[in-house]
Amino acid sequence: MRIARTTKLLVEPPSSATGDIAFNLIVFFLVCASVQPDRGRLQVLPTSETADEKQQQTENIEVQLTRTAVLVNGDAVPLARFPAQIKAALAAKKTPSEKVVIVKSRPDTPYHHWIRVTATIEDAGGIITLQLEEEREVIVP
Amino acid sequence: MKITRRSARAEVPSMAMGDIAFNLLIFFVILARAQDDSHLQWTPAEAKNLQNATNSVVSVLIDSDSKLYLNGQQLGISQLAGRVESLLEGAPSGERPVLLKIHNEALAQRFEPVIEAISEAGGELVHIVEEDRD
Image (tube, rainbow over all chains, first blue to last red):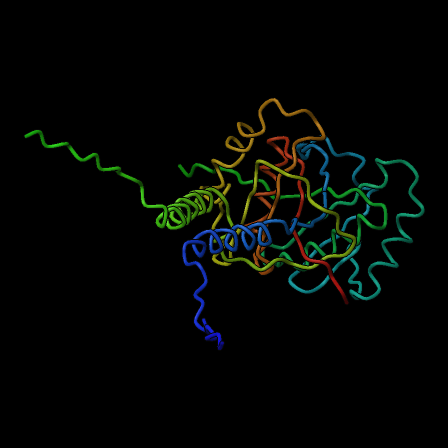
């Protein structure tokens, strides 16, 4: 007796599960996209004070920032030499109040330059304080 | 002659469940994006010795057009200190981080008043930058 061979070549996958598969894929990629944590630098600034209260600031290091350059106590310093110079200047300072570095920026100083310099100061042990020009309202008679 | 009433069973089509879930997901994603700042255009600056930023309820951003945003909503510099202070209300010292995202080409005349306002509000600044690999 001869048995007839049955051939089932076309087998379709169940289409009812595709919605669930798509949903799980979306959740997977969403989780992947959202788990990247932000990285950054913590910066603690001393509380603000007015110009009258700053007698001892004359002894603090003053760093001026222009668009591309850095000036330490009024003298221009090449950017490559700045980390070593600020480290040497801060090494002589002992108390936290002496380690305060006054940062003055020209209005056209870009942020990438500012953050690089302030990060270098903090890494050298300095405490950043910003000196901003106050806006004054003048009434013209 | 008595005709028996046929009872028809009404079923919710299960085929549509995936599509419903998908649309719900899209709805909540859009809702969440309206409150964060991931849709804003900015390029982070680079710095060394970075640490992982802690979760914060306050995120301040200056985008490539120098516009200021607080948690994804545009505002003026005069409103910033008050709004940050109210968001951080009651948080103890050491748990008041403010994520600060500044476009790398933003100028000091724009970002320094922002830093000052956050400081005034008692926020602890965390500059969001990328690792400098040079």
